[in-house]
Image 1 (spheres, rainbow, N blue to C red):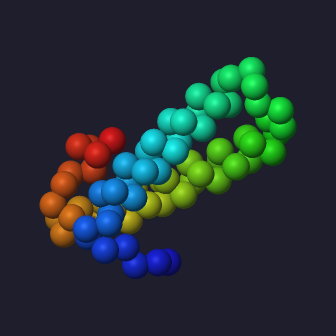
Image 2: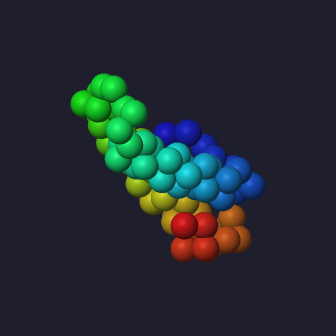
Image 3: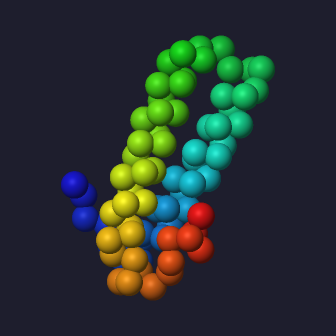
Amino acid sequence: MIEISSAAAPLLIQALRDAVRYNEQLLKSQTLRDRADYGQYFMDLTQLFSEIKAEYKRKEGQAGIPLEDLL
């Protein structure tokens, strides 16, 4: 597991949240060509987001911002 600094952790949460939202909308669009491969990427992205959220929750006090405020 990588070590994430308290200063970078909120930014990482927000960046992954935005990436999940963007890719979720992309999966709904009609312009996507290889939906099956992209679906696997989206699943991997959401898994990473879940793991980072869990790690953030353990260190939430150090970051100073509640996870719920970042989501």
